[in-house]
Amino acid sequence: MHDTANAFVSAFGHAPEGVWTAPGRINLIGEHTDYNDGFVLPLALPHTMNAAAARRDDGLLRLRSLQSEQVFEGALAELVPGSVTGWAAYPAGTLWALTEAGHRLGGLDLLVDSTVPAGAGLSSSAALECVTALAAIELHGTVLAPAEIARLAQRAENEFVGVPCGIMDQSASMLATEGHALFLDTRTLATEQVPFDPEAAGLSLLVVDTRAPHRHVDGAYADRRRSCEEAARTLGVSALRDISLEDLDSVLATLSDEVWRRRVRHVVTENARVMESVARLRAGDIGRVGPLLTASHASLRDDYEVTVPEVDIAVEAALAAGALGARITGGGFGGCVIVLTEVENSERCTSSIRRACADNDFADPVVFTATPSAGAHRLA
Image (tube, rainbow, N blue to C red; front, side, top):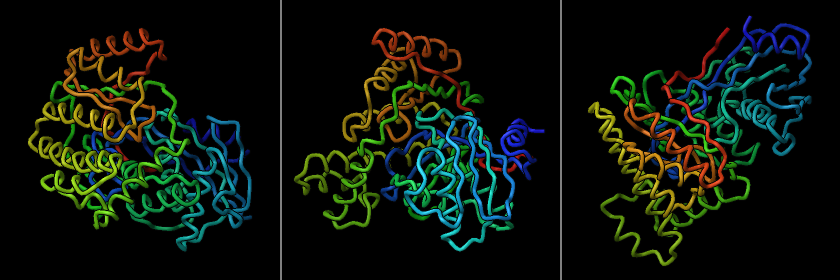
């Protein structure tokens, strides 16, 4: 029996009807573009959120996590935004969103176990939403396309939890495939599986969890989104995605607000960097994506202002050690850095980053190699 299933038996006293899994993600490039109708290029990690679940016939929802002492029990029919807090808000909100969309669900016992580092910007929340949705719809005989599951999971996070995230994280968790990055147009939701196999090219994509606290809670993420939406309205476009790189300078000249100018410049140039990265990957030239990663970091640091000293130091140390490129990944305000480097240079980059963090009295980072992995699916 799967370890998660054994834990389920211990928690609830009966066997689960199945075990499902959904991955965390890193975003290769395309940061803060998803809620601007732009382009993103994430990939799924081998780090996953596993869920064991079984139906109930009394309409009760019982939630447990091996990573938290918080236990939730309540009636599914009584779920409303704001009624659940902590980690349990994400699975509860997902079931609420499914019900709100007209899908008939009954009660559920659910236990989750995660290897996705929480608070590191690797989308443990999206993985939790997606694995909950996958288990619930399968157990209750509902058929939904993976892209629709991603949309409902995003709604759960936006409306039930109250986090104004875009669609990227949930799409990556549901739609990613092994050995590929997911090129997603967040306006049309069109996708392309772009081959991405660093190891075959003699390269490594390192993920550096700086262990800097992930600070979305202070409203900074929501402030960035609001600035973009207000700037788009002022410019007379439905989203910043509609501004081309060629028109950027003339558009910026019409904005009097310096903060808006910086935010717009980041989104427009970042969309262009995603498109160029995809072109280079299609051509099989992974190494040439490196400078685009570094340019993305500079833009996120200077124009979007979402980096913190821990991640800036890690990027600088990686580049000083000869990395092909490095940048913060995820929403920012803490979290992880990705580093693209030759395999034989991985140890040098890692040592350089650890030394720089120690010299600045930062936490010792956790470093691992990203392997493009499969999206959400049933395990047992």
